[in-house]
Image 1 (cartoon, rainbow, N blue to C red):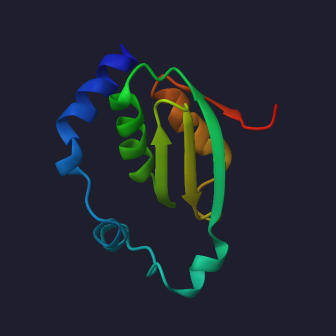
Image 2: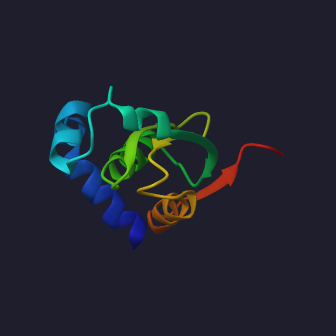
Length: 112
């Protein structure tokens, strides 16, 4: 059920539904990408289990980018990886993992 809702939303938003970085930041009210808050940005990379196609990766990127505090998200289907840049003062790794889990995927640390 969750997977169907995710696919439907990803299909509806598509590539044209994703705004540019500057437009997203302006809508969120976050600071400029070149501002002093840039120092506080963290990056995390996880293995993602549950991808069955490229639409899964694109949809996950889209949904993560909508989260408050997420600066950028890049997911790859063949490698099953996601890299997220985020403001730790606005969102934590637990919340990011929960978002990924709510979409029907599992995020695991890259260290084995």
